Image 1 (cartoon, rainbow, N blue to C red):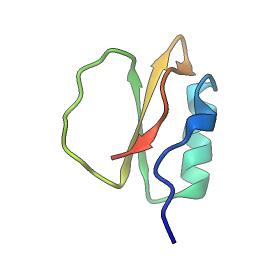
Image 2: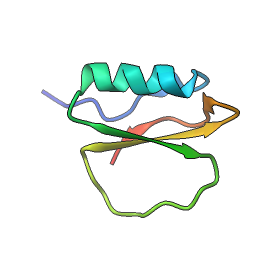
Image 3: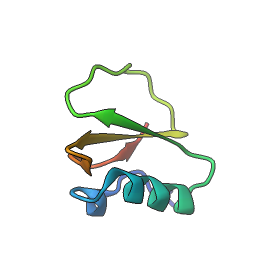
Amino acid sequence: MDVKSVWPELVGKPAEEARERIRAEFPETVVHVVPEGSMVTMDFNEQRVRLFVKDGKVAREPRRG
């Protein structure tokens, strides 16, 4: 069974709604809300999902890593 790693359906949703939805599916996952265009580390961490947001809404497809 493949573990879900992307959430394209969350693009355009409010950041908090997206965070709650990901945490409901994977409670062990740390969800970071990051302003679009911010610099982030390039390390891979399968327990992390970054939500890149603009104007309070998810700007791009959240993905695990």
